[in-house]
Image (cartoon, rainbow, N blue to C red; front, side, top):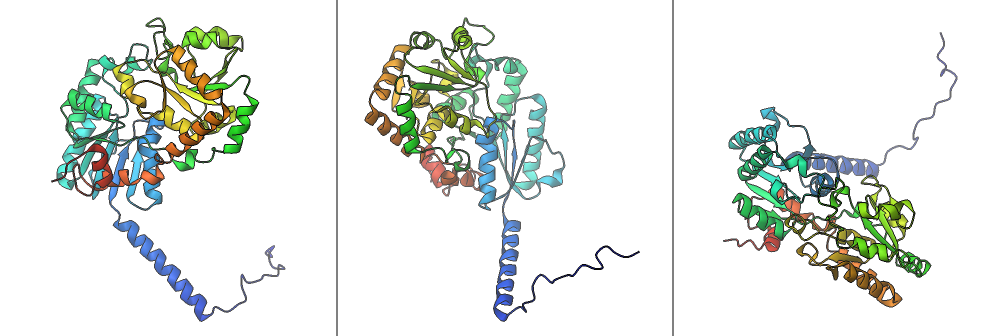
Length: 409
């Protein structure tokens, strides 16, 4: 049987003979490839064990891991699967686990402690929220997940077994130092990936949106249901308790926009389309959705409690990345925010002051964007490089030690 290709005229890819120069270039490229492979083989091994693949899993574990990989800083791998094969941990320098709390997870951490004796590796416990039941507010719908006293006990024991803990801010650091007795707790702020959020700031577009909505400025809140008393446990005395009335009184003056969730007491306004609501989007779509909503301001209300004081300033930073001025609750959480409020009336006053004057508004937008330039992940990846490479208190942890005021002898 004849091949169907018998009558096809075939041409070589190139009829040009290789020159000395091209051979030299090929040899150089091969050498660089071999050097890159050798460098990869020489990289320190690091393991991450995530609590989830949602927002906090990405902010605190996955995104920093990706940037470190892209910069060829570590041979780093991450998973939610607990690997039990001892040889898997050969030559591992650092293991970082996120928000582990159950008895099974404690047993696994004990296994890692045994492995540590053979490999001399560093064990780090990462936490970005308070998980002790007594300090989670009643309105938080996730509180029941930490109600079991055994969960509190085992999470405490895992933290105490770790060589070091990492948290998002100073308040949380001091909180866990007091609760656990663990002194080696390191603050690493949440840093925003440029590849996620550094494409939306356009000064001309911001100015156009301001003019188009001058008669009824668009005011945005984006957040999960954890901020609302969705189960009505405390009669809606949640993060929006102080601002609900102010929003209701000003629906004719401002177009209030909710993205993700909305407070129960305003449900009638949502049904009547007097308040705008947009359902939650996936993580990668999140900044695109904020951009598409074309809002002039963002705001971030929080009830005054221990749980919220320990939260990260993400809502403020996200607004800054977009060039959207953000008005924040006057708590230590948002100590860096220039515009703050304590009551609903103060929130309205701040909104009016910002949107009533174009020059003032555009200046606030520009300052917000400038502030965000200090919080890009790619520019601050040195924090994570130091974290994984050196133990707590090491003099080469220059970024970490400066932020945490660690005195090195």
